[in-house]
Structures are given as C-alpha cells and as structure tokens.
Amino acid sequence: MKSKIVALSKNEDFKNLLKKKKLSNKYITIFFGLLENKNNEKLNISFVVKKKQIGNSVKRNKIKRRLRNIVNEGVKKISINYHYSYLVIAKITMLNNEYAIIKETLFQDFKRIK
Image (cartoon, rainbow, N blue to C red; front, side):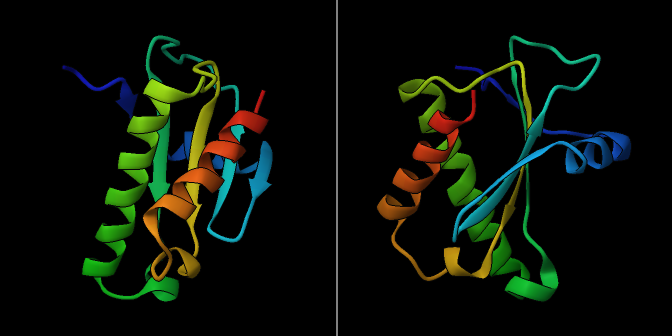
C-alpha cells in the first residue's frame, strides 16, 4: 500500500508555514496552513527535530520514526484535513515519554485543527 504522506520540499514552503497558524503542546508544535500548488489527495507534512535541543542522530531519528508512525495511524483512524500543509517541530519531552501518551495528545491536536 502506498503512503498518502508527502514531505515538504521547498524552503519557501517552510517559511510560509511558519507565518501561518500554530498549535502547541508539551511534545510538539504544529504549524499549519493552506499552501498554493498543493495536491489535496496526499497529506503534506514534515517533521523537524532540532539538533541543539535533542542531540545526536539516533535520538532525532527515533523521534521522527515515532511521529511518522503516529501520523500514519492518524490518517487511518481520525480525519486529518488534507487541504492544510503541516510542519511538526518536536520538543525534548518527546524522547522520554510513552508512545501511547504522545499518540493520544497528537490525535487530540489534529482533531482540533479544522
């Protein structure tokens, strides 16, 4: 089965999203908004984990894998708005907490985005 998730690729897309709406909790910050020239059949989302905050590549990649897995489950279980593009920035608290708790928190945040 092909994934319905596509990452942002252009620097200008990242800059435009940082100027749009923002939603934050203790694990992540989500920037979201409408971007031009976007395919509405796929979910346009990128994950950012800062090197200065988190540390080495093993930790950063673990967080990105967790986030990707949560979003893949979210696409199947909850209704995520495909018209928006998302930029998810992880925080250090995500590294030491349980997967299930993080997943519930993120699902609640994605449900709040309309």
